[in-house]
Picture: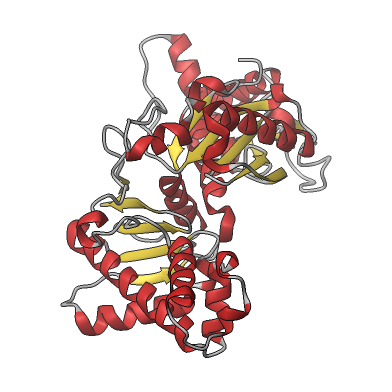
Length: 398
């Protein structure tokens, strides 16, 4: 790492402290020598910065290497680690129908969480704000922390959001309702981000060997959205709408073109059992109570009606994946969301169609392993990245 340069001693101290604080965020216990190797700073500088960060409440000093039984000869090395109580990060998945809040320490270790169903669109913007406050408050309590411990809150919404956390007007007022001015309404430092973008961050962070430089993370369930990584960068656009899927209305010119797999499976199954007399296990369920999991389970048991819905979903997914690959040259499409773990048969159909009906190259289709918490995990990852970029801005009491 290149050593920083600055014109004033005060600025130099800040730059040095930022380097050491960034290192401490990812390190376990470390010595001055460890920090020197990572930052290219001198021993005297590292020791001085560590003393300042201890005084500021960011680091804590541990037993030296001799007292800890790590060495018996030579000068004992002073050892430090990030102070566990230095602060907490809140991630909130503010979906249309449920809120999921996680509270973690600064390394991303989970301290407490809350899953809370909400009243959908009927509760209005004020209701969504109050539900967000309640979920965050309850998660912080579950984590054994206080509101003052929270350094940053990151909220994922099913709508585009610009760099300031505002959503444009559009989608019949749905975007502004989902946002509800959360960046201004919640306490402390708040980042509001599109949920599919956060899912892309979560998938990338969870991949041991990296997802790749050109990947679309397709968040599906009730609605369909995409987090787009192209040439190694997350695409956002000036209004945060780069991953919105409104172009699908040109491909699927029906009312529900941007619905996700869960909503489509449910709707198509209900329509099918009402429109025909075909025998199906789904007829044992009241039509207005059929859910996507019922369709998937029936298809696994060999139900022909349910299998046709799976085939229809697979054909649709193949067309969406091919469109993303054609527009952006993405090499991989990761299908994620709470329903993703059950969509293996849909992905199998889509892969066959991509391989036989479309001219290569076509993107690889892979399922997510992160389940229904993919958005909130991405929110925590976004929070950790923000703190790493400028840790001094989040010093306890700073």
